Length: 171
Image (cartoon, rainbow, N blue to C red; front, side, top):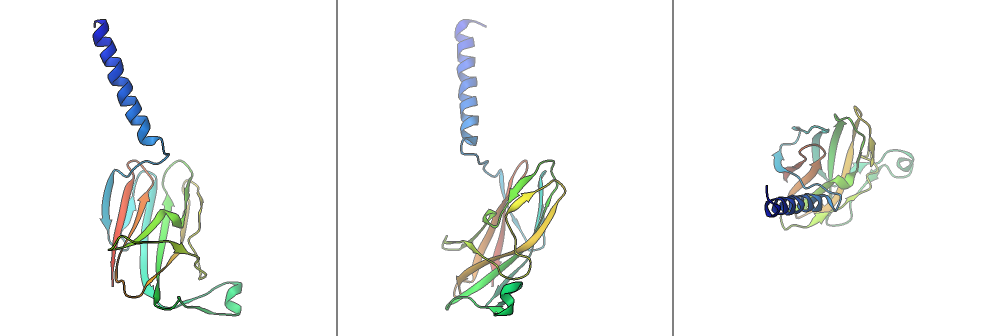
């Protein structure tokens, strides 16, 4: 190979290397695929197995723990409802990774995202480091306007390749 060919090959290699590095520069890997799931259907990658076991739309839930002594029921603010999502996650990989309710996004058809709020019932889904082979389970709470009846719940599932899992919710 002559000097021009070697230089061109080196430049091409550097361009590919920079482009590859840039995709990881922000510390996030974009999902390779978006896949739709039904409630109760398991999503699995090389690292994580996740199941959204149930989704409930309600205007009341029972508080647990010390707070339940004074008030046993929790109600949403006026003109809103609760959406309560029950999730189980298993780390099927070889490394510990972090999980959090922030991993889930609830969006209505207009594109408005709803942040989770503290769930005071039994078994809230908490942020934590999940060790290999470990399982966690819990509930995530959202407060939404009562007139909105169609949402999408989404979560990027850890693994290679990662999956953007989406559940369509309609009431």
